[in-house]
Image (tube, rainbow, N blue to C red; front, side):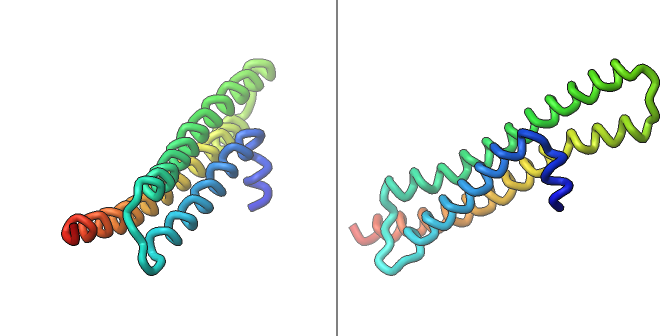
Length: 131
């Protein structure tokens, strides 16, 4: 696993930050929404939407990492001239790792956002009925 982490290059840091942001914001939003006496306030909704934002940021960052990786691989192949296909596909595999990780973070944040959004809407509808 650490080999994959190193192979992702510089793009691993913004991806890691986005992953940590999703985890922290998801945990914070969960504690606000599932505590006793929870209410559907606007501040909680803002934190909740930030979960989806950082997931989208991870996806875009992953795609950016893939594009940069493919350009670097293409430049290396161009400079080397004739190279084996195994080397080419090895470079492309490394380039695609960041997109795969970004998509994973995005999918997780989307599922988390959906679950938290559902809870927020339930609380909001309960408040509307009581008013």
